[in-house]
Image 1: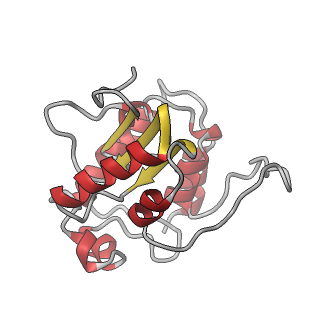
Image 2 (image 1 turned 135 degrees about the vertical axis):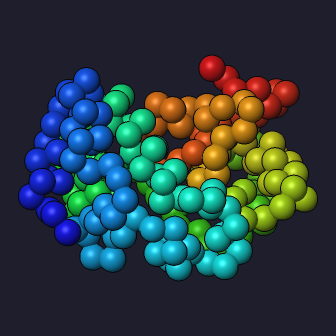
Length: 199
């Protein structure tokens, strides 16, 4: 790994300069990240996923991920991007601000997301965010999930759905502006509507 050069790159705060540095110094075959086990290869990434989700990775995901990193560093200052630090260096940004203790009420629920939403009181939630939930299962599950979200989220609420898949004809949606680097598609859908992106 090359932690010092990567850390130097992550301290940049100019999205005009960052793509040039990324292209010249890091983007290419054999990129190794200093975080333990962080190797940008389709095999390493697939090995970390459950078998049902491996099919969700786009072919050549190592190359796809490099392209997504390039997209992100061209839009957001590295120095303030916690997600880039976590992915590329495997650690928190040095000057990251910790969340305040007791800043909100959180209840951890262990279970299947669709079952939880189906059993919830109608309109219980203002919003939900679903990452990778639709990446492995098929269309029947997606329809069931959509119905469960429509039930559990109040009309006019928002469901944010993130996927590792490559975007289709509709494009990447909010993923094009997302700082977290890895997503291929991010959609924000208002409940109680026809499912159009609220933007």
